[in-house]
Length: 203
Image 1 (spheres, rainbow, N blue to C red):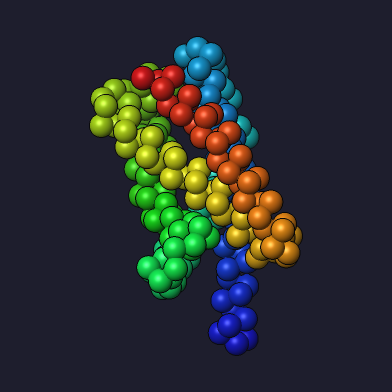
Image 2 (cartoon, rainbow, N blue to C red; image 1 turned 90 degrees about the vertical axis):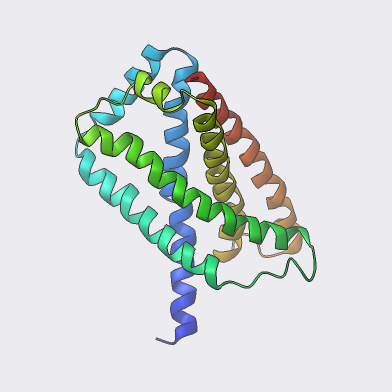
């Protein structure tokens, strides 16, 4: 297989995993957290339901960890080898290209920290509940970093939908790509509202 063909296949896999299952998991995870806007008890009930799913470990490894690791590692390779031309021509799409790479790196760091603070702590015997998350967000610095991290992840997913549609041949014409820009902007706004409301419900 030629190097160009291999890169093409890897990019398509990378793009697909960013939407399915990672994007779906992101939305589901934020919706679970959003239960905190109702009450601590509502969040604890939703969290316990997810924690007690059958075959949880298998689901986490196959549906979450392996896809995220592949997407993150190959995404970092793209981020450090891709050549953007923002400096030469400041077109909107070129800026989105650059921001996609920046938010990818920020998202990678944020997710690693978040997994340590929640999933690994749970494996060490700590219960993931409203109080745990509230303790994590108990100071302004943590809240600020979580806002940056969550918005970076949401932007990376939303803007990634645009390139996903091109990579998989869904939007081929300039008109359809322009329309998809507005769709992804709407996706970013809606999911950001859910994510931010969830964060501040724990504060």
